[in-house]
Image (cartoon, rainbow, N blue to C red; front, side, top):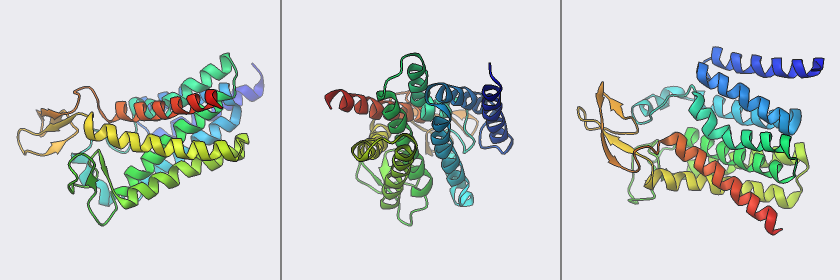
Length: 262
């Protein structure tokens, strides 16, 4: 192994470790981020790491933005802002798979899979982190009623605009790094945004929701107030991580279908 390869591996390890030190990632998340980075580097070189880093840094900074206004979401959401291995896999798993497959069997389609999956993940993260700061409560796409901020399966004007901006950022960065062309840059943006909308749809109809037996709070947590919660809707095993992975993966598959058609 050449010295520059050791340096890249060391850089990825230091980046993952530093993220854990500053509590952007949990220890398990740092390990998952390390292997995700290795996969992207193997398949797409340093440019793949740059695109992944852009997603991770912007999403992490947004999670800290006005964090005091987001504290109440801890009662609704199953997990906090520090990401564990499942959250890393949910958002970067499709990109990591693309990196491994492109390393073993290079094909331009995997560059599009990488870009689309990260565009979807970035759009969803931006929508979640900025949408909760909307002055108006979001609208549930299932009941068409106003629901508490941070509720899965709900949309707001701020959140939708944030999703579009997050997806567009990755699409433009992918064009700069990989020279996708105007048509594919637009496709990455639109499919990334579609993945974000699919995430909302899955969150409304399939994601598991629970009710606390002590305080009657509707939550994503299977345990609340130190007691098991009652499962009230959705698929029991369909948590937010599963929803995130499915939306990113499906958007990427849409890109593969488009690639074959074109």
